[in-house]
Each structure stands twice: as structure tokens, then as C-alpha cells.
Image (cartoon, helix red, strand yellow):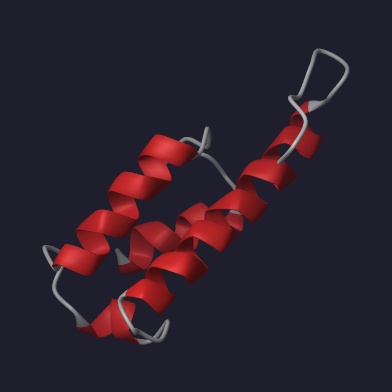
Length: 79
């Protein structure tokens, strides 16, 4: 994301950008851990790769965990 979002950007645009960033972070962290998406469901909650992924999502995205975007529903279910 090279530009900052201003008042002229509406909620839907912001949510789409945040969701895209979250998906990118998830893909990067899975690659770093040499995992497939299916591994997230089989590994325990305290696994270091899962913890790093959750910390990075919280630090680098503005999306709230209670929000409605599908990526967060998916993340809550597997992380």
C-alpha cells in the first residue's frame, strides 16, 4: 500500500485493502514456516508459527478480530 487513505476513502475500500494485506501476511508467514494452509488446522494453538502469524496480523493490519471480513473469520477458526 503506497498511498495513505484519507477521508475520501470509504469503509468498504478500507476493509478490502486491509483484507488484502492480511491475506498477503498470511501467505508470507506460511511460506516462512514452510507450511500449507491445512497445517494451520492441525498444529496446536501455541505453535510458534501460529503465534508469529497472529502477532504480525495484529501489528500490521487495522482490521478488528470481531469484524466481518472473511479473512478474519477464517483466521479465528485456524489460528
